[in-house]
Amino acid sequence: MHENELTNEQRDQIISAYLVGSNASKISAALSIACTIVYETIDRYKKTGSPYPKKRSGHSKALSSRDQHSLQRIVLKNRFLPLNKLTNELNLNFNTTYHPNTIHNYLHNFGLKGHVAHFKSFLKHKDRIK
Image (tube, rainbow, N blue to C red):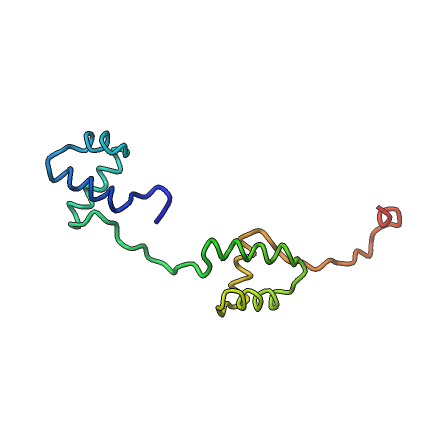
């Protein structure tokens, strides 16, 4: 469920008030919900016969927000751990079988990117000292 989404009880209250004969503005004031949300719920009920939205399409996330947070903690604790070892540690902790590419994508979304330091051969002597 998304952050600003109505609960099932709120949807049921809206529909029961609508079936009794209350208009949307009165329902909105009584339940302290925005009028547009009430209108959308009533409209959905009229069209589909159900006040509940359809299931959202798409593949679910591999890691929950809690798992993502613990992945971040593992990475920030061992900053120089290679991706394969990091994936193995995560799979052992969560008893899962995530692919390293999945972990790499999550790290990229966190803004954590691994790059190898390059030798800068064309620096002047005074710049190397800095």
